[in-house]
Image (tube, rainbow, N blue to C red; front, side):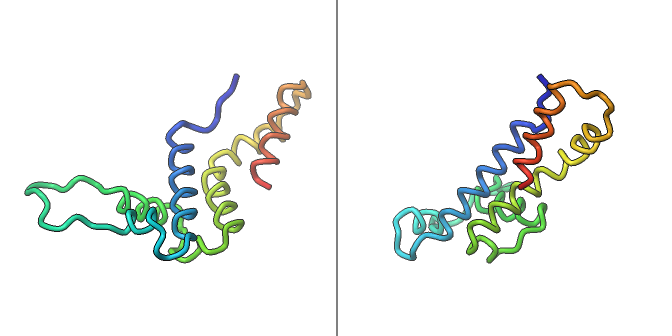
Length: 117
């Protein structure tokens, strides 16, 4: 079995999906308030650990996603999937250019087309 996507890419995709889901919630929802909450006081000295929100900001910047794009659920979801699938496009092209017409490659091709749509 040829696995193209990594587990880390799947985790990043799910994090961005969850972020968009929570951001689209109504103001005042407990989950949204918890996500926005910052603990009072100072952090420990030394290099601070990366918070979840800082990680999400890094992911959105890394993938070229704008802050307010989460408002449109369908567009946000497509952009997340396409951003991660760009690495898989090379594999898609290699499958298309492969003269091997066996059933396994055709199944992979159908799978990639469904992901990109």
